[in-house]
Amino acid sequence: KPLAPPPFKHRTRRRLGTVRTHLVAMASTFAVALLVGLQCVLGEAQDPFEKELVELATNQQVLTGVLDKWEHPHSLRKAFFGEAVDELSTTDRPPRVVTHTRWIQRLYNSLFVPVLGIALICIAFPFMWLNEKRNARLDTLLRLGEEECSTESADTPGEDKIGTLVHVSGMVRGKVPVCDNRFKQFKAENCIRTRSVVECYQWVERRNAERTRDSGGGETTETVFWYEMEWATCEIESRFFYDKSKRNECSRDDIPLGTQMSTCEVVRLGDSFLLPSSLVDQLSSFQNAEDIAGECVDGFVLNNSRYYYPAVRTQPQIGDLRVTFEYIPNCLATVVALQAQNVGGLYTFLPYRPITRGSETDVEALRRLRLVEARKTQNQMREANRCTIRFLDGACCCCVKIYNYAASNFFSAMLPELYSISEGDVPLFDCWQQFKNDSKGIKWFLRGLGWLLLFSGNVFLFHPLFVAFDVVPVVGTVIGDGMWWGIGVTSLVVTVTISTIVMSLAYHVYHPTLAKTVLAAMLAGLIVCVGVALFVGSI
Image (tube, rainbow, N blue to C red; front, side, top):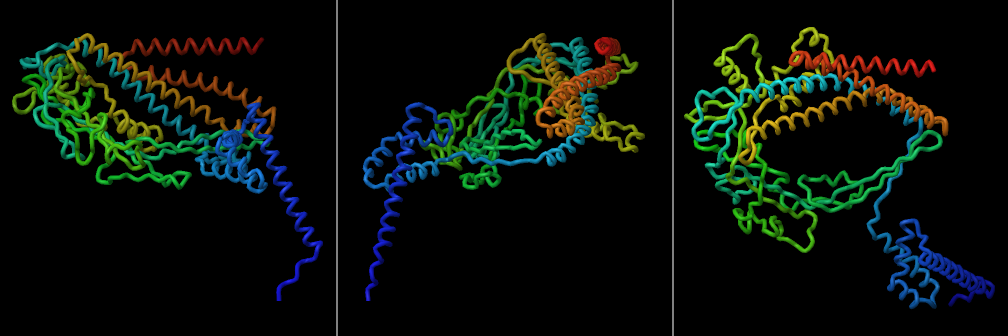
């Protein structure tokens, strides 16, 4: 039997509930419409979500949908809420990650900072000593080299110049073709070097972290992630991205990304000199090689001076590859180095390095010493720079271990030597000016880096004190700022004093007068600073 209809009162309640739902929906819709209208007129939409809602609400399609569904409150509500929110949800909004660190956790983490400060101080001392020692030797080498250097012909050099510093200008020519290991079809003749740069179109993750201090000494960090597509010369691991939907894949796995250079195996300077590869590698004036590479190289198609795989599209896609081919043609160049005899009757060049003269004054003996020093390998130079004091090695001194590591791995590639090639016919005076400018720039860069290591190490020793005072809302900030100034000034004075002493000791062997002058100036300045501090304190 069919079910009996519900009582009248239930039908009335259901009808009243439906009316109430419609009224609430209409009221909500009118409220949102009023707010959106006011924001459109007054322009007070501040939140990024509200701005997007304003743009969507003023869009012609959304307004048309609202007018079409005016008679249905549920449809009207969906027009404003459903469509707008759905479209916003599909928009790539940058994800945000908010983390909170309590004060006690910050204090615990800050206890490791003094350990880092001690490590930086231990690194700073051998770093500054090696740098100042290198600077002193290079200054001496520049002074002696400028006195001994002579200009020679690239076609008819003199045999009496073997073992001396020479300045030679001439035409540099590659005698054999140059091939690329990744692209077998790319082969260049009458050139010195080639370079190929392979890039892949990939997702790149960017992030921005903002930290705010809480009232209880804690810290809140809000990290915003966003993603961009760009060409990169290295493979970017997308598995470490915060957004797992962004994935990077290369269209070809047989071609590694990055930059690869190839050098001609036989390079001549004039008719009498054979250039070593260490000198040829210093040339860097590359130009585009599309004229010698052709229209297609191993599946890559030429378009606007670059080769693309797959063929160029209107918009590149993730995984697309592109490569740029470049080369250095035969050119005029100038060499400043030590002249030496090569096997086969040709002359060649070696580095001009400092030697221990002692009481030796014979010219031929000094030339032999220079040739012996110039033929030392990289490993032999590393062993010569190591600290061999047995007492310190037995005591396992931390600074000695760091000194030997830095001398063997970092400063071994920056030995004080004169061994350069420049494109064009460069006069001897201009070559020496370039040497002096380059040495001055490297000297002050490494010197500033050593000062920064020592200064940072001194400041890091007191880092837990700043975190400890953050628990006090107002007073802690004032005390922390005052401590920053006091510790910063003290660390600066200590850094300048120690670095000056290290520089004076390093220069004492090569420039004793300069070392004594710098040390005396430092002591005078320190005495003046102490006197001013005592005078201000007495007042």
